[in-house]
Amino acid sequence: MRFACPALLLALLPLAGCGTHAPDRMLSVATGFVSHEMCGAAFIAGLEPTAYWREAAPPALRAVEWAMTHEVDHARGLVRSRLAGLGERVALHRGAAGCLVLNGPAPPAPAALPPLPAPLLADIAPSDSPVPGSAALAAALDQAFAEPDPEAPRQTRAVVVLHRGQVVAERYAPGYGVRTRLHGWSMTKSVTNALLGVLARQGRVAMQAPLPQPAWAKDGRAAITPDHLLRMTSGLTFGNSLGAGIGDLVNPATQMLFSDVDMAADAIEAPLGAPPGTQWEYSNGSTQILSRLVRDLAGGDEASALRFARAELFGPLGMASAVLETDASGAPVGAAHMWATARDWARFGQLYVQDGVVGGRRLLPEGWVAYSGAPTEGARVGYGAGFWTNQSDSELARRRVEQGMPREAFMARGAFGQFVVVVPSRQLVVVRLGHTFSPRAATTNMVRLVVQALAAVE
Image (cartoon, rainbow, N blue to C red; front, side, top):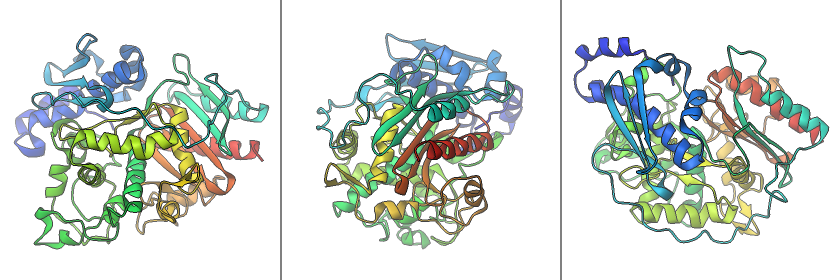
């Protein structure tokens, strides 16, 4: 997402009113973003926050650094940010619940969580030392980390190539390593897919059945199903999360990440703009409604939601590093906020290579992986059910296939070039994490890496 300069923000303030145009909500997109990312860097990833921000700041924010102030309080575990002295946002580190941008009093500290259960997934690497890989894979990683254009840096920070359940190559940028957690952004939507899959296997959610919501009972929203929300075809008008620019200041799907106590609440109240199932619009709000559903079905509070994710997904996969952040209502921020090491993101991808079965135990229902990658009609980017997919006839999916990616491939994808690409028949998972601010460049580099990795493991 891009942000306007402070002069433009200040010019907008006299025109601002209430709701999404309220000044504080507008400014919170910028200051909340800064506070949250620096909090995550300092207290989740273990990185030096100022150095991290220099590379993670989108170009427009970096250009107005003179107007942005931020303070990192290591003793209290918080970061405070302001833009031109306005719009203060504080992000607080809350242990296992990650970082939370405060919008009122801090919620109670997260409840103590039990240890993760023993992993069912076999070890994917022999040690904590990075696996250099073959000459062909090393050459592919050389290109992934190369910086041919100083004006458009790729800023690759981690790559893991997993083949037949084993790491066959990996590399990390200086200051990063095997144990460094990295922000997945919208790759977290694919984690929400997995949590719903577990609930579906347990018989606690029916993806094709209308989702009971009192606010929807008397109008066309009563027909909305979890499948509609996962595929982004609910018809709710709650902002498009694919775009970037000054519109993010008033975009409710962006504002909810930094200004709402209960992130799903406003999305649930959104009006219907099209009949459910007839129109595709990628929105954080749709996934956040599902995240609240996960919380409610897991037990109704933050501790129950986190215990469920750890016991039913992270533990079996051996994802010991995963930090799934929550909002102040205790719902996972399943639209955007999970941090994990590159190896643990690869473990997540391996679940889909193995058709949802780990160590002889089925975590996801039979057919769930095929369902996840099956294309959604009208999704112009090539989108399935919580995953981007090449199985679509959309222009962007066709372009990825023409560039050499297999048609069967599907992927978790997050802002600024985060990818977990799954090619089931080739038993391949490719993870790429970093800070690339051009979506086209990020896709081109990802496709090249996947094609080269496939050729190298032939």
